[in-house]
Length: 221
Image (tube, rainbow, N blue to C red):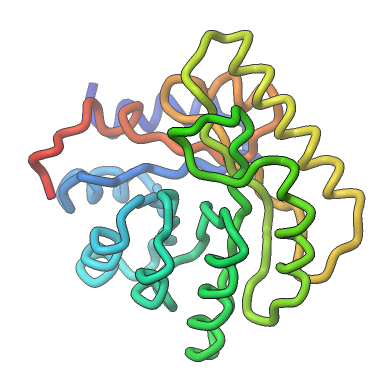
């Protein structure tokens, strides 16, 4: 299947309220252009240098999403270039984002990444640290929290559904509360192998790489 055919197929399966992010990490500008020509405007990167390179060389109406682990010393490079940071996972990172975006007179839109499966190999805060991070976010002037993100551990449909459902419960609970700088608009969860379950359990943002571009080619940088 071509990139266009895969995207058309995905669009047929995704509800109207859900947002499709094409995960373009390691993909060439030519591949991304194919997705762009189908109407995709949201692209996800997990390395700062790659996002910056593509930002400088690609269409300016694209919304770039940073979906990988964000190192504090790299924050300065994405100020003014990123539509949404999906991976806020510590107060230290929050403080750096606040500082760098404030210096530039910009506002950072972020999602709090939760390590819902308590997986040592995954980024994200544990549930018990969420309240403290939220309190810190309320003190910011240049960071707006727009929702939650997770990357779940590999598992079967039952375990996937359990983790996605737990994330939706947290999302819905936070939605009932009145915070400063925090609103629950986006629940980013689900990737190429499990997005259908994620959508069934309440995701309204899915991040698809191989399901759009095919198997990843790490030689394309």
